[in-house]
Length: 421
Image 1 (cartoon, helix red, strand yellow):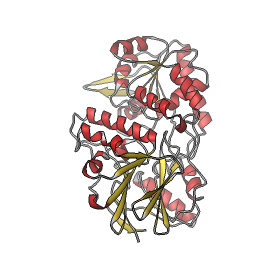
Image 2 (cartoon, rainbow, N blue to C red):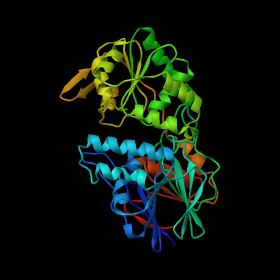
Image 3 (cartoon, helix red, strand yellow):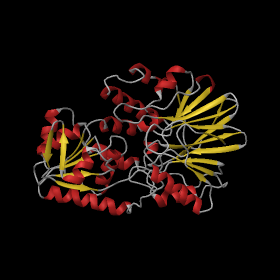
Image 4 (spheres, rainbow, N blue to C red):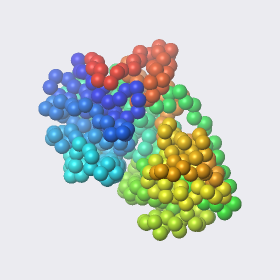
């Protein structure tokens, strides 16, 4: 039997990592980072037996430690072309803001490209003597994948982060998955039921239009990968981009360029191309001051108001009630975005700002909620055994209990636990 090691954090979100080995061959799936006072990385893996590394998607909690095993082994990195390019950009940005205080160098990040063997969805690839690997669309962000590994007559699925619902940017995750014996699944929103996507979109558009009609400026702090592009596509679909100026700042500009090169991972490449064509790029502080003074929409990282250009816009826009700050993602407790929602104040640097601008929250999730998780998982044929990870402790337990109630076997592993599969 093969052995599966849960390297990363199991009952929390961050530093995802799994090592599957049989005899003298092993595959690493994801190798991420968790941001805290100092970045936390998963433990080392046995490099001598490492045959391949697979990464489900580009977000740093799944990819942020990849240069470490790539630098110390000749293993190939398997991912979609979009994931390869997005991961490189995110790692370069992480290196920049960390001032080099990482266990790898800028040159090591180049191994993402040098050692990658990109693959498409549904393509089966032999790995070493014992394994085969297939990627399925995960619907989370462009290029995201569920990793299926066949070995010794069995099949194990690593879902990564997935979204079974279609969005303006992404097609939904593949639902008619083949038979599997073991499934390692995320559980991020196992205790949440999302409102309909259409309702959330309509409410977001209404908030934007109300601000523009009173001659205010809209600031939408958004993650650079996925969320910024989703907002662009929503505004384009409601024909707002043809009537009002929309500005894009920060790393979202590079992400737009990457996704334009990989249209096969976009739900509607034509709509995305129209949105990109109608946006105005921000290059420097003069552009930022100009954008803040216009009656328009500014999309800028970071999504929780935690650094990035969104801090600069916040300072320029926070004290005018005609303006609005529209949050579009979950705000982690302790972040400026969460503080703003709870208190109407935000501490930036050594100063606390009383916010007069209108503050709205429209959560556009890129994860499946409780119903979406169960809908996909319980329809995987083969009566698989489930291992529930990548969620707060309560979310992991909730999903495991829901699966148990449906007659399926589910466990919540501990970090560092090794199981035979």
